[in-house]
Amino acid sequence: MKKCWHRRHITEAIVKSFMLLSFGLVAGSLGLILWAIISRGLPSLSWEMISQPPQGGFYMGGGGGILNAILGSLYMAGAGTLIALILGLPIALYLETYLGDSAWGQYVRLALDVLWGIPSIVYGVFGFTLMLALGMRASMLGGIIVLTLLELPIMTRAMDEVIRMMPQDLEQAALALGSTRLEVALRVVTRQMLPGIITAILLAFGRGIGDAASVLFTAGYTDRMPNSLLTPVASLPLAIFFQLSTPFPTVRERAYAAALILTVIVLAVSLGSRWISGRLSKFIVK
Amino acid sequence: MDAHIQVKDLNVYYGSQQALKGINLEIPKKQVTVIMGPSGCGKTTLLKSFNRFLELTDGARIEGQVLVDGEDIYANDIDVTEVRKRVGLLAQRPYPLPMSIYENVAYGLHIHQMKKTNKEYKDAVRHYLEVAGLWEEVKGRLHNPATSLSIGQQQRLCLARGLAIEPEIILGDEPTSALDPISSQHIEKKLLELKGQYTTVIVTHTLRQAKRLGDHVIFMYLGEVVESGPAYEVFANPKEERTRQYLEGLF
Image 1 (cartoon, each protein chain N blue to C red):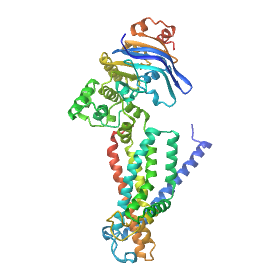
Image 2 (spheres, each protein chain N blue to C red):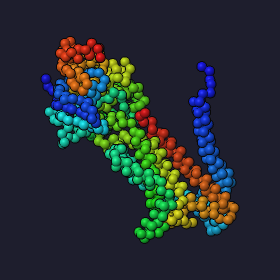
Image 3 (cartoon, rainbow over the protein chains, first blue to last red):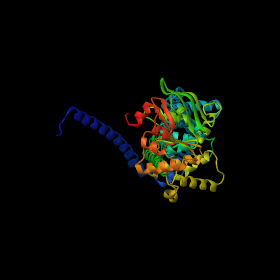
Image 4 (cartoon, chains in turn yellow, orange):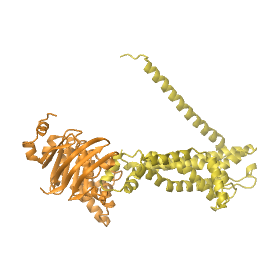
């Protein structure tokens, strides 16, 4: 019964060390990113930065902050996520409830997967073309529409994957009580799968709030505070981009601070919704 | 015999495989009918044909008729949710809905809009929890998750939930097979208490349970009904050789 090094054990050791190496690489890069943002961003982070819009000469080292971009991003990503949820949840439920694994279901999933994979700049250009055709200018509304399009396939497909994990016996328990398929979907599936649905929403929100290319043409950029759906609006990714591309070191440092703010927003939203879903998931049937 | 369910020339196929072969039988009203037989003989398939659960299985094909109170539940103009409201099911393993204990019982009442005021709902939930013998154990924690109950309590909750929508027929698909002996006794006791109020059809593969519960017995083998009749006759004096062998434990 003594331990000895058979081929099986060697294989296991090699594969296991490979797994650990991958994990280390990923965790290490994440750590490096966080360290870069925090170490360079924290010193230039100030109350002024998150409480004021930019003043004249902001991009040359002038005073003020990026409140306009923070709010702009929150509005656009928030609205985009909300609309994507309103459109996406019914699609995901329809896929599970009525289409299942049928050919049509597979076509819809394929379409969503393709849309998921499309680079965001393509969404940006598409949105821009659409807006030109409609005679719209770069505006918050344009940004919201494009972020909705960008987030919709991500959210829907992620929810679909979650909802497909629904235990069949549980669905049948509800059907046995004389539920219609819709009642099962709305009253049972969404409750059972709530944590997964929230994760899907988060995934889409994170993608939306962090995306620069899609809002570049469609929402534009401005130093003014967002106050109308029909005028251009600033966003955090673009605020980072514009500050980072100046020749002034102090402004470039502030780009890191803006990146830190963006990261903290995403983190706060994640933690908040995890807390909510934790509270709501006590009814889940395992 | 006053038949509640009548099965006429029922054939069921899963893909190319025939699971039920030319079933003809009658299930008497307000008695306990026990379907027994070795595993794979089609007991559960037969049971599932009574609440139209077979159509949830991909590739299942059904021929023939199942009449409940003389009405063919497979006819085109039949509302399947109405069938399942009248024919309740107690599954092999309890599956509470992802809700509180209270909501589990209230769920069926809500979707069928059976009550009007909040108080009526509360009274009904209490009543059916009492009928299922669960009220005393849960009255202080109605709003806890149903999953916080033990598996035996969960099965009684499923019974309460099923009875709350006022079915005429209760189907039980080996309803005690996942439970410990004490919980099984609880469920069996409840089923015996409810005898006379509901038509009950229980699938079981424990012979002793069949003897304890059954007024009427159906013995199935390889997708066919070999013998059916009043329990005392079938158990004491089986007409068919295969029934006799099964009762003696030969297979």
